Image (cartoon, rainbow, N blue to C red; front, side, top):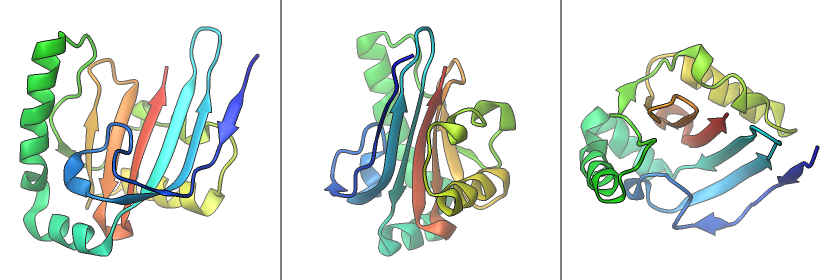
Amino acid sequence: MVSLQFKLTTNSNSASNLPKELGNVQVLTSIVQPGLMEGCYLSIFELEPSVSHKIQEIGITYFDSDAKLRANISLKNKDKNPYSQWKYTPVPKDSYSGALSCGETDEKLIDRIWRGMESAGGYYIMTKNKEGVIVVLPNENLAAELYYG
């Protein structure tokens, strides 16, 4: 089995599928483990405190323009696995447990994501097939993109 694992610690304006409304984020960890049939991907990002504060003030409507953008992209590309609408945490457990054990990374960081996904106060968006999820945890100044499938 081939395994690829790496860490990034640079600032990024275009962090994978994260909503552009999250602004500049710092990549805390990024792990990819491809498999023969399936694989996993986990990236965790630190949000700027001002962005987290604004999300806490506005709530889920903070992501409204992102939802419209995603819908337009899905229609143009006939995306077979589009993201759904933004929802409130907690995230259904069967949607992320595999991705959180994708490779080795800082256990305290994984615990913060895990706790945030299991409790109220955050937001998430999931792919149609439920293999991919993006979670934003403003109380923790964190966002994560997970994929397992």
